[in-house]
View 1 (cartoon, helix red, strand yellow):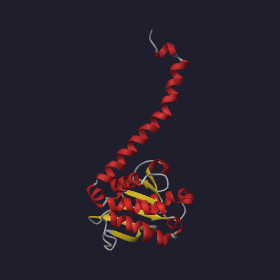
View 2 (view 1 turned 30 degrees about the horizontal axis):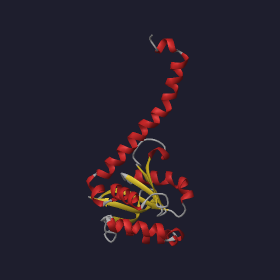
View 3 (view 1 turned 120 degrees about the horizontal axis):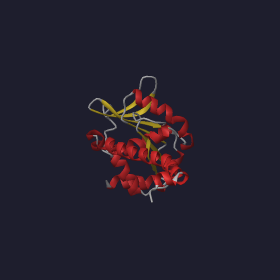
View 4 (view 1 turned 135 degrees about the vertical axis):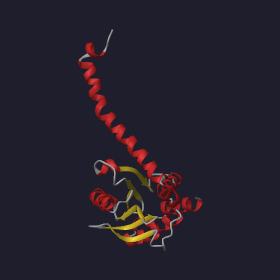
Length: 193
């Protein structure tokens, strides 16, 4: 997707994008990106703006086969993301969205709202326009947000695989030091000579 790489490079090279308010972020970054990922931003059955979630509302719902697939919540200022993530996850779970994204257009936090765990545990990937290359960003945007990947379920399967790997790694990090300590404390029980 050459056009998406070019668009990401434009975002990275022009400081004006960082100064946009939420409405401008939605129009200039989010909708343009979705269009380049083969979503039709003019079809409200595909890209539904201001989607009601039960007790809340998200900025955009990406829909396929009359189902919510991805919710996007646009907020200015990444430093405030932690205060919004719980609301996004609650709204996404109520709306039965498979994935949820919190973004200011430059930083994208990707979540699995229906997975178990705390908010930070359900965040499976971060896209950072300031820190990653245009090619890396494009690859991940395509992997998780391209219409064909979302519609086919490939995006969700990839996200779940990343989540499960991270969960296993967290368990290993938690239990491995305890196991080593036990081996050191009781070597005669664990090591047969």
